[in-house]
Structures are given as C-alpha cells and as structure tokens.
Image (cartoon, rainbow, N blue to C red; front, side, top):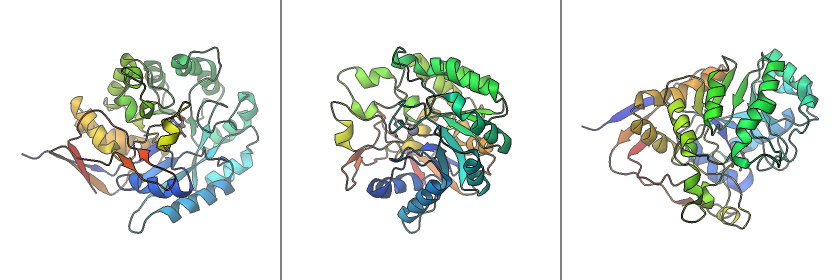
Length: 346
Ligand code: NCD
Ligand code: ZN
C-alpha cells in the first residue's frame, strides 16, 4: 500500500535568497514547496531600514516566476545605528516580521553587525513593546573561544543576559546546533523559540572532515558532535512547539565553496521536505512533521498556518538535481548521503 502524508504547506523560518541572478535561480527552489519564508537580510550592503526591506521585497516578488506563489517575510539587519522609530514603522506596515541580530563578524556578511550589545538596548525595548521577534545568530566571535563552543558560550555570555534584561522580548534562537541550545530553548517559556536546519538533523562534524574535507557540508554554525545531532533530532521530532524548521538554505556558487577559503552555507531549499520526511520517518515521528514544518513557526510569529497543503508520497527514490545553474555559476544541492523516498506534490 502506498504511504502518503498530507500536511499544511510548510514555511521556512530562516532562508537566504540573495539578490540579482542568484535570487532568480534559487527562489523557485523554495517557492515550489514552501508558502512563506523569513528572509535573511545579510546582503551586501545589508537590509537595514524599512526602505531597504521594501525595495528587497519588491525585487523578490519580481523574481518570482509566473504561476508560483510565495510570501517573503522581511527582516531588518540590526546595526548599532538602527533607529527604534524605523523599526516600529517597518513593523506597523506589516512588511517586516523580525529583526536579525548578527554579532559582528560571526558569519557571511556580518561585518555591520552588533559589537556592543548595550548600544541596541533601546531597540530591544521597542521590539518587546510592539511584539516584534528578534532572530539571533547565536555564536560569540571571540577568537579565544573554540569554534565548536561558540554557541554554548553565546547562550551564557550574550543571550541569557539580553533575555534577563528584556523578559518580554520574543527571541528566536536560529539554527541551533547543540544540546545546550536545545536545553536552553526548552527552558525559555513562551517568548523563546528555536529553528533547526535540515542539514543539522543529518550531518555531524565527521561528515565535514572524515575522508577528505567536504566543503558543501561546511556551514555556520558548524555541525557539532554526534550527541548534539541526536539532541536536535529528538527536539525536532518531539512535537514540542518551541522548535520549527528554518532551513538556513544558504547558496554559494561552487567556486566560492570549493576554495582554499570556502564560504559557509548549505543549499538545502531544493530537497528539504524529502530530507525531513526521511528523518521523521526514521525517528517514527511522521505525525510530528506537520508541527515542525508547518504549524509551530506560524504560531510563534502569531500568523495563521497556510491553508494550502502538500502531499508526501513514499516510493522509489526521488531524484533531485545535484546542482542548479545560475549565471554566476553552479550551486550544489545538499546531498543527505542516503536515498530520498518521499516525493512532494503541491
Ligand atoms: C549563511 C550565509 O551564507 O549567508 N551561511 C551559513 O553558513 N549559514 C549565513 C548564516 O546564516 O550564518
Ligand atoms: Zn543563515
């Protein structure tokens, strides 16, 4: 008997769409299965103001192919010069659904991020007042801290103090990669949520480093030990509404990945739903997939779940392209390392 699963159309609560020709190439990969996406603002230059977000939203809608529907939920990139009134206006307009905190230097295009967290206290106060969530890239940038410890140290040194100072602020811990992140998110009450990527449910640090370096598995935060991957799997498939999918699909062209100083990011937009179905099936938790992919995220953001549905069907392995072509060069699609048996129909 064919096994099928129909769920509300999913949303992606952490997505990099880039700009220009790459935007045109990657947007359909997400819009094919996903209804909405929280659009990361780390362009060069970043999306800082309400006006920047309006313009970027326009470019995304222009890049959307005829006949596809997708609702980009815009995000402002927090800088030490961000103005509370601009944030409030952007939120009131309905266009902007979150503000993103990058510690300066933590990841791709984060040079304009925050160095001194006390300088953005007024923004956090305004956001708490108007109920606008803060999306947090949770890694310290201190050179003294080992890259595998940067998430855990960030929670103690930065995140917990911010949340104590602003208990009403709604915070999303983005792309958590550790058991420490899972435990902290669980203990945080209704104002704290956490996204988990597809690839962090599938790879650990051995996948990046054993048997030769695999640049397409390198992303930030970097994948950790197996015990952490297992903690993420347990959290994602537990049914706990704290956790929802944010793919962090982050396209870079092959020459930029396969380099002596390769860019961080896994491009997972194309096959994410098939990968997630495989993971949830393996954990005997297919009944929890809809919560993780389609219900918990909208609930955290105070939005309705999508009306439309998608149907996943189990059968012979589905094939996805190994790469997508762009005029800037090919972009490699995430290889989960196992066959994908779940096809997706919209
Ligand atoms: C992201 C990118 O390429 O923009 N890279 C990544 O490894 N996830 C930035 C980010 O979200 O950290
Ligand atoms: Zn990201």
